[in-house]
Image (cartoon, rainbow, N blue to C red):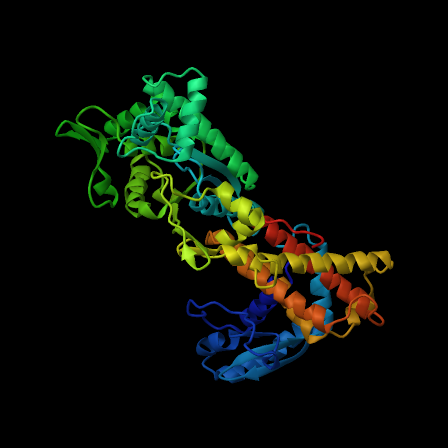
Amino acid sequence: MADPLKMLHDEIRAAADSLREGTYGGAEIGLERPPRPELGDYSTNAAMLLAPGRGENPREVAELLRVELEGRLGDSVERLEIAGPGFLNLFLSARWYRAAVRAVLEADGFAAGSARAPEQISLEFVSANPTGPLTAAGGRHAAFGDSTARILEFAGHAVEREYYVNDVGGQVQRLAESVAARMLDAPVPEDGYEGEYVATLAVELAKAGVEPADLDSLARHSVERMQESIRLTLERFGVEFDTWFSERSLHESGAVERAIEGLRESGAAYESEGATWLRTTDFGDDKDRVLVRSGGEPTYFAADVAYHSDKIRRGAERMLDVLGADHHGYVARMRAAVEALGADPNQYEVVIMQFVHLVDAGARAQMSKRKGDFVTLDELVDDIGVDAARFFLLQRSHDTTVDLDLELARRESSENPVYYVQYAHARVCSIIRLAESDGSVPPASDAVAREPIEPAERAMIKRLLEFPAELEAAAERRAPHRLCAYAMAAAADFHGFYRDCKVVGAPGAAEPARLEICLAMQAVIATALKLLGVSAPESM
């Protein structure tokens, strides 16, 4: 009984198949929680899908299905009721619920391994230009990418976390010029970087003997120091990368030239107006894209093509890139490039992240790295902590803007969602500790299996059993925010259970039965928080 809800669903499908004549018309047999408890624990539409093929009234078919399921489910079900146009409502027994809790406790990683076709995934995220400290906005990318990687690995995929370091090009050159200006006590170039960190770089590099006239050396050393600063910030934030991939290395190794030459040989690249172009229109893009400018300089796009060619060479079955909100136009051309390289364009997938606004006392903070007017991720963590920062940055879908309420994130109360979830976990741990001190760790027994079940227990067990489906959806849809919502709902169910059901000291088999529920809830909430990169404290 590894996934009790899936097994119940499978029994319903098997019962329906035994009565089926024809097809279900492309529809899926559902198993849903009714809107009100009096309508049952779960409800299925199977009879209404069977009726057309059998040429019978759905309620008549529901009666046949009811009899079939009663025989299959035995003492797992109290009764089955036909409702409305032909829904079949299932009222499950306490024995089924108690067995479901045992299944959660005995599972080796409950809800793990949900991937139907495990893949080797190259997940590139953050990849902020190393021209300044990592900002709070970059923290959203970091939290999303890291949590998505954790979820995908839990589901059974192999994930390589990768940071693409843009360590060449115009922005790096402007950083070097800005540092040089600070060294010479001259005005920062109009399109340069003005943050205080630039002045710090100038002092450090001057002490290291780097001359302001040596812009190439300034660029290299500045990028190295900023990259190390970013690495330490991410490490503090609970994010580590398997690979830091240097754009400069693509140029110095000849990988860019080799990729372009390969495209020329395949006919995907051509010369026009003194430039080299990629025929991206042959693969669905709205216009062809320049790979090498007429002056002989490769474009950023050329480096990106070479980079993804390298990912393919390294065996990536899926290339998942997490990009900023200004990259919508990038997707079609890069997908076309992947196909031009001879790979399946469906191997390439992009998640576009929306913006982060920090709200304090009702006012939004304005952020600009170029002007030096921004909130760093380190400053955000100093203010509200890693757990709150990650949870608040993750609790909205990637395609919606986040307004992070700093006042709320600082609050240690049930109004703060991460505090609310962590407090539920700590309270469960407190109950378990109290039971252990009393020698009340629950044994498996037939008395526990027969113990009547209260509504609050049913609600909590139902929530536990939803975890595999939520985890599967979070993995397939790249949606860690679903686990935030799930954790909050699970915490709410636990707080209701704690209010309505005595655990330690409950009479008879009620105590061990409820302790089993507590142990299962503790494991599931801890897993959800771990996948979000948030700690699960045992006391608060």
